[in-house]
Image (cartoon, rainbow, N blue to C red; front, side):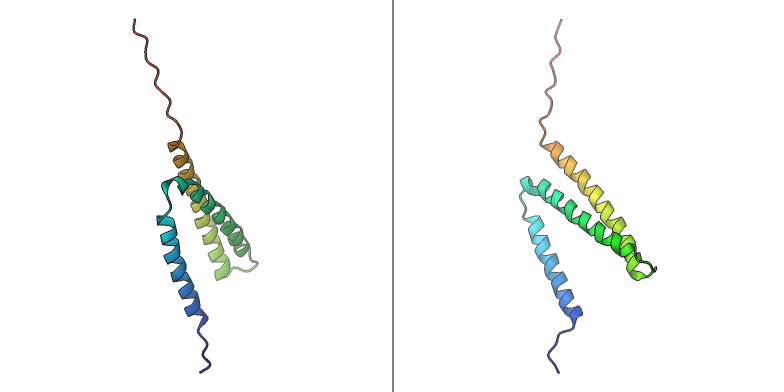
Length: 105
């Protein structure tokens, strides 16, 4: 017994803690901050796309390059959806045009 912990267990613990913290951070954001949060999420996803492209561009077709292609596809959908949601949320803050009253004759 050397007292070492399996790296898989450590990775699983970090993943569970990240999910827990992420859930509480996202759900406790005030509505005024949702648009900047979406913009930050889009920026993070774009970095993921760059890493996934590097993984997908490997010289040999193996599990890593296949997962890279899948990561590129999923992160691209995430970025596109994030921009659509951000645009929709920004439109909510625009002032609505006042309907002009018709001149009665």
